[in-house]
Each structure stands twice: as structure tokens, then as C-alpha cells.
Image (cartoon, rainbow, N blue to C red; front, side, top):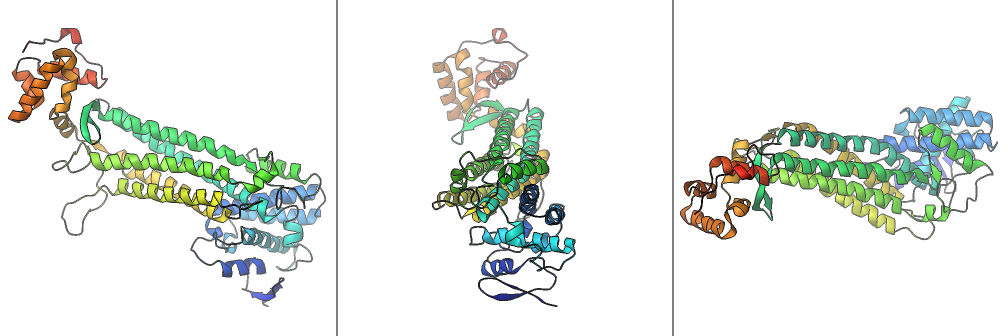
Amino acid sequence: MPRFESDSIGERELPDGVLYGVNTLRGAENFDISSQKIGCEPAFIRALAFIKMAAAKANGEIAAISETQCKAIVAACEEIIAGQHHEQFVVDILEGSGGTSINMNANEVITNRALQIMGFKAGDYQYLNPNDHVNICQSTNDVVPSAVKLAVLEKSTALVEALGFLADTLKAKSNEFADIMKIGRTCMQAAQPMTLGQEFGGYAAAVYRARTKSQDIVTDLMTLPLGGTAIGTGLGTMPGYTEAVYRHLSADVGIQFKPAEDMFDGMQNSDSFARVSSEFRIAAEVIGKISLDLVIMSSGSRSGIGEILLPAVQPGSSIMPGKVNPVLPMMMQQVAYAVVGNDAAVSLASLGGQLEINHFEPIIASRMFDTMDLLTRGSRIFTQKCIMGIKANEEKALENLLGSSALATVFVPALGYAKVSKIVKASEASGQLFVDAITELGLMTREDIQSALKEAAGIPSERQTGNRQVSKM
């Protein structure tokens, strides 16, 4: 038999076998604008279920619902947390009701599954009601932002691990390339000697910092507006509920949550989301910058810099045979661009809240979830398929180093500024390498030059400065 449900607008027939109700149906129809339905975000659905389960336990404890109702709601929530029924969450994450359709989708699915557990049919709301029982002591305005926070916290574990994996791999490459000399560059011009290991060590340090900042900032999300109900007054809760819901939620999730010190602030403002999003953006920018450097350093060994060799993962052209492009660093640059855009949307949504609530939490959730997925998957693929396989082109790196007149600065302490300046001008006029000019003039031996370059790059030298044989011009 078809199932019909009524609301204040009218009666609607529901598809066979669904656990959601009329509120969800209207929301799904009204906001069918993207491919991102809330059921596609498992962490978010689990977060909603954890909150509804904690609320049921709290409400059962204060006798706001019966023991039978409490047990059935908890059982339904446990199934959802375990991964069941997610296909029943069909509302678009960009729904325009400030989260009401999301909250009611959760209320209706949990109610109807709980009714089945109690031995009734879906829709028999006289025994268990989405609003009066599953949503008691709650509102959309405190449930949805709390669920977004729980979801970001869950997803942050994988993101932090991915950033750590990337940082560890960059550090390993730094050790591998510790003795490979190259020319350092500023403003895209040759500057001073350094090692490839030092370059990768700098990359590793930046990603480690991004990981730590990302890990630390998400702790801001452990403060929730739950219990504030619609605007922060707590109207609609019952005595004992708020303390109990935080106790049960913390125990069930394994994180110590706490209520906002000022519930009106907790309801009005979304700056915690903006702050977390900005750290994720910075992490993406750090990796994007590293990716750009890898593109530059790997540019054709004959026609470009060519100091590193990236793994060849696919052909680079449909018309140019043998061409291999730096596709994985380019992928991460695009991830960075997307994350910067996502953060801009979160920032705009955070400042767009009006008066007592921010009704743009759906777009905040959408963009933050996308950012975390992009950064987590992108960083892992980038690490596994690119960073781990990078090889040093040691000969090309040394050739670039020795062919640069920027080395002149290294020899000023030993030879003096005026003398070095004359050598630079003479070598440029003749087309001779600067280092060759020094050795031909008998000013320094090749060993002296190698020792000076290592010392300039901070590498311990086998030869001491005092043992150098320096001749007069």
C-alpha cells in the first residue's frame, strides 16, 4: 500500500519502501540543484546520528520520552552510524532552508526505522513522532552546526594523516638528496649554492607545520551550540537535558565536547568554521607552491632546469611523441586553486549570517567537506605517485651550479670583491665558466672550489679553509 503523509501544506504520496517522510520529500524536490546529497557524506550522516542518539539518551534519562522510544531511537541511530540507510538521506547539501530539511531528513529516517524496530509501520507517528520525540529538546539551529563540526572533526583524522605522510616522504627525500649540490634561485635567477636536500627539507618543514596547524585548529570545533535550540535561549529544552546530552555525546564519540560559553555567540557566529577553513587553505597553498617548484625544477633536462626527474605516469601529449608532463604537481596546483575558492565561499557564508543564526551552514559544510576530500585524496596520490619516485639529476644540477656566475659571491672572502668582479667580467666576455677561469688563473684548485661550495651550502667539508692554496692574481 502506498504511504501518504500530510504537513501544513498538504498531503503527499511517498515512494515505496522509503524511510523518510513528507518534509524530506519536499526538501529533496525543492533543492535538487547538485549531485551532492547529504547521504553522499558518510561523516555528516554519522554526525547527525550521533547527535540524535545522544539526545535520545538524554531525553530518556530525564523522562522526556519513554524507555521504549529511547531504545528504538538509539537502535536506529546505531544502524546509521554503522553505515546503514544512508541512501535514505536524499536532501541536497545546498538546501535553502538553513538546514531544516537536513534536520528533518534525519528526524524522519530515524523515526521510521525506530518505528519498524518497535514493531510498527513507517509513518505510524502516533507511537513515535519526528518532531515530538526524535527532535525533542533540539532545533535545526543547534543540531546542524553541531553535526558539521562533528563531521569535520572525523574527516580531519584522514587529512592530518595524509599531510603527515607527505611531510615524512619529503623529509626522506631531503635525506636522500643531502649531498647533491645545486644552485639556489631567487627571483628566478641564480643566487647561491645549496643542496637539493636542503630544498626538500624546507618543503618537509612547511608541510609538517601545515599538518600541526590543521590538527590543532580543529579542536575549536569541540565547542558546540547544542542545547541552545533556536536562538541561544535554550527554549524548548527540559531541565537536565543539556548536561546529559553533552555527557552522552562525548562518551559515544570519544571526544570531550562542551557547550559554548555564550550560547547566543554559539548560535550567531560561524567564525570557528572560517578559522578552520583558512588553515586548510594555507595547507593547500603550501603544497601548491611546492608543486609549482617541482614543475620548474623538472623542466626539460636539455631545454630547461632539469635538476630533478619526476616519475613518468602517463604520456603528455596526443601529438608530440615522447613528451611527459608534470601532471601530478599540476593536479595539486588545481587542488590548491579549488581549496582557495572553497575557503572564499566559507568566508562569505560566515559573514553572511543574519541576527541570531547563520543560515548558510549548508554551503559551509559543502565547501569544507570538499576541501578536506580534495586535500586528503590529492596529498596521498601526490605522495605515492610523485614524491616517492622523484630522482635527482645530479649531473645536471652540478652543471647548472658550475655554469653560474652567481658563484662569485662564494669566493669574495678568499679573493676579494674587486678581483672576483674582474674574473666574472672576463669569463662572461670569453664565454668561459667562472670556475674554469679561477682554476686557469691559478687562484684556486678544483678541490678548493668544491670545498668552498660545500661550505657555502652548509655541508661539512673535508678540507678546512686554512689549508686552501690561494694564489695572487
